[in-house]
Image (cartoon, rainbow, N blue to C red):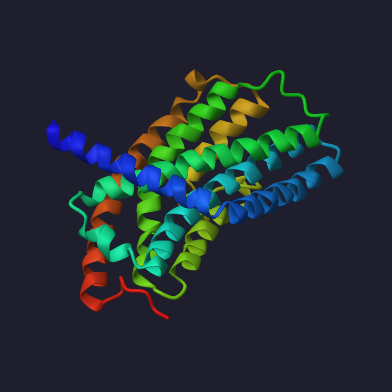
Length: 267
């Protein structure tokens, strides 16, 4: 129990460190927030132009969720890249803490920051589209699916963190490949029914598909979470599988990076 408490304190230390990184680079964070709001508005205006409140809300949910996923992935990837650039990555990996504690702290901060970032965008969209009627929305269902989805995204985030670890030059940017694959198969802006049959199989393997369905059911239809049990268990299973796999894969990547000298800054 003492060991677990020590590791959880270490995880909190990494959360605190990432908070200070956010504060240090506040100018970039503000610029990215403006960029995210403008992007979400541009996509949502397609629904407003068609005069369909349902389409508007559907696109809004897709834009907001995509922003959340982008923030989580970029934060996890950028943390490793920034540490390598500042020359502290080797010292971090030498610290007397288990790797799961470090990754847990980084991923939890990324998800918490992503939720705050997403909440700001959601408020901006609601203010921009006063014609939206959210009186029948079930916010509890939407929030519950975002949190359940975050459980599975912990594992995906750990897998994404491998890329900046192995590729010194453009590793952080390579996480966009993983994001774009999720964007394609998860029905972010359209129904997965329009995809070819083999891609629909991939859609049912993506945790993002179930999160989007649950959030839209809550906000658009006002469905309580008790009626969406079929979307809950896949997220729990995905988290139970992806987190151990992510830890194992990151450990293998770390050993390779140490052996080949990829932890050091280049240039």
